[in-house]
Image (cartoon, rainbow, N blue to C red; front, side, top):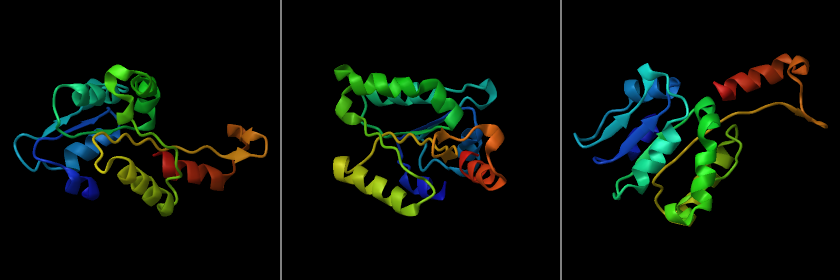
Length: 159
């Protein structure tokens, strides 16, 4: 959150879902100026609204930055909105940059942001979704067969 705080602008917007991300934003971020907006449904229990809201805020006639902070549950409700945007010329598909990466490796995170900078220079909407599932030689490991170490790894990333 401290790194995100440094990226906030006087006229930007941050949207969240109703997960812990809304509490992080409300409890740890501060608006650098009175024009900054934080939009969160914490008391409304609204999972899945943050991605469509962020897209709408960005395609509105404005050049102001928009940041979406999305948990895996909220993202599961609205990932198709990104697909729709990516496929639609009306929303400008060149404005969508999506990559899968391992969040457990700092080098992967650095490579992602370098690729983002190389592509656009400045990002407007950043949607983060983290989650892992143990996999064996035949695909995902059934829940009943996950070891304690694998379970702890899942919890350390997915919460």
